[in-house]
Length: 96
Image (cartoon, rainbow, N blue to C red; front, side, top):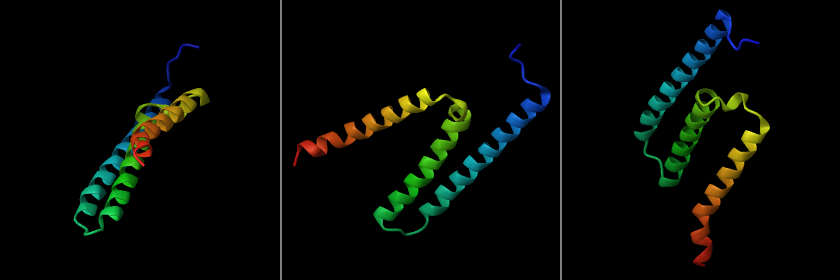
């Protein structure tokens, strides 16, 4: 196998990248629009985190090619996330 993609496969990838780019642009506009609403702090943080996680997921899945990776890569990513959350919450667990 030569590793080269057909012209149609390249066009399909470009189409997907354009859609993801447009989705990221729309989510950025949504982020700015939501900032003008007067939400409580908790709701504002929840909405901002939801939009940020959605944008981050799109970037990771398509631009970092995690969508097509093996399960071991997903396992390593999950462990990294778990330890990240643990390290963020560990100090608050110590000072009770």
